[in-house]
Image (tube, rainbow, N blue to C red; front, top):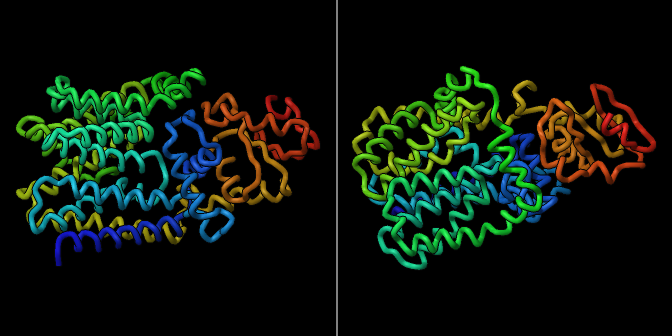
Length: 430
């Protein structure tokens, strides 16, 4: 069997597994929130750039949410397709392929928890992984033959990353740090110019709304230092990559920074740079574990190519992680986890409010996740009125509650639920 047919079969099987997980695993609260992005398409949102909203919009267009059996896919279908495409692009970016490369490639990819999760859970990291994979592919091809076509692809892929998640800025800077000669390359600057032009609509949206995303991520998220933020960083990274991949990718990344060619040096700079950057960031607040997940791509590339690490023990250890992740997928699909995990039984927690509302719009306080889930499960109107204890969200830019003033509504505020015939300012902002 040819390598092309072999990898094609495995990617098909991977896509089927992701599709099953997307169908059966209960919707995550953040996904319900991003589904609203897709219902209110815009060039930007408070928390993130607009790519994830476009994905949920396209998923909803391909799979109508009115079909309850397929409702999860109305949020996740594009994510599944994009993840398979991500794997294919990564495979095409591997410089030296040996007969055993396919097995190594699949083992590394399938053993990393968060990389697998973003194959069926829709978050901004899913498109970030795809466009980052495309970026590294274009960068490798560009170094081989500096054509205008690859310059264009570099520009498009950088814009795609930035439209997915702002962390893309770090990816671009670390690649540049691995190859400073790009600063003297006219076609590389042309790629930057293409990216800048493509980003203009989003930058205009930020300007028109007083730069809410930049203020939130750069200023509002900073908190008083707690030692636990730093102490939990490495264990959290183990949960993202698994301890073995994390250790090996750091070693290979550091070695590539010192001894690698331009392409592999940039891969190493991404791995080491992101780890160091976010470790330092723990001194200004909590760092979410998955913020480094984009390092999965250079990790797969470096580990697939490095034959010396592939002793019998490596195959066995990574095989164990793959097996554990398959079991975890089955557990998630069965929806048997306790309520406190936040991974199952969400609709049951909202059912009482739905019964009391009797089809009326519902005003929630507290987290943005609750009204988002309510709208997903029941297709009824629900809005959020932020309380002093909660951060700003996209609901604060939408101001959907204003359309409900003077109309009957159900209000859940300060732990109590009541019906009002005419929703007033006092109901919203007391």
